[in-house]
Image (cartoon, rainbow, N blue to C red):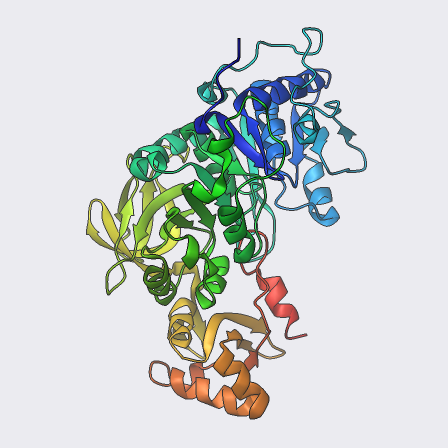
Length: 484
């Protein structure tokens, strides 16, 4: 008897245009678990470029109760800094002094021409997972993330799997209608960070979406993925009609840096009927960019505000003529410190007492607030109090400025304010045709509308593109190098 073909919700991933079923994913996880149980390592450093291989390794480790340590990148300096917290590695990294766990190529079987993974009874230590929900059963597992913030120093943040699972449930409840209307998930962000882990892997796996394995760098490749459909060989049990990407609805998980570039030449306008939502996190998205994307795609990005330390805090979608207020996620309450206006959270994603953030807010009601900038970016300069966020917002409004960051440099006798600006096309043309001094003077004149002359930046740099890291953040050390 011919078996019925699997439908869209049975597909977990697309790898090199080939559909991979949950049955295959489950078999690969169990095969990886066999290699993991051979290791005595309690803490394992996990890094994979491939989202599929990473997901196989992650759930195999989690189901075995191991402490998962997630480096933000595979740079040797980063790995060596973190290695002391681990006893082994898993993935496509090697670290001197740490054993590499051998999973016998379990995950790599999904990339082969074979539709079956080697999962004989002698290889697999446990029963196969029967459903996606089995991935998220209560697990005694910890995950360590690393955040660089603005300083570049790697700071460990330990989370319980239960906290992440709770957050995913809230996301599914909050965006239920969009998820129900979506079949495919594409992403420009890495799964090695908490935003990518939650939105690129956990959210689609638990809600029944198929994940495109690639981490897209260019919007053209996303458009191509959504337009062309699949021609490659796939699991024989999967319905061919269910794997035609040109007919599938999709969510895009992205960051402000990618969305700013997209808005300048939006090739996804041809795919806007397929897009059920665009998510942005990792930093502030300028309101002008949100407005532009709204006009191009018929929807503004859903901005998610949070951090590695706090998890998700609030979200908004700016589809009006003025910026929308932030709406806190369910089960989260907040208050505002009277003297500093700092946001104080009570959240199931944070262990312990109320958490005082460095974000300044203005209360609207119990569920809504507006952002006022970072408390830790208010400095004393030339005996004047200056909020660097305010100065950046002011510069961002200038027609010649695409992206800006103002930093403080240590001078020989006193601190110096310095501005790093990625120019628009008009700004680049002015810089080439006129002079840097003329451009500096124009931007200084613009700032004089809000700041005294003594408070203006003394040094200016105009890189072709801002040096964002893999988390979509600007690291101060990288910016400081521009002034060496």
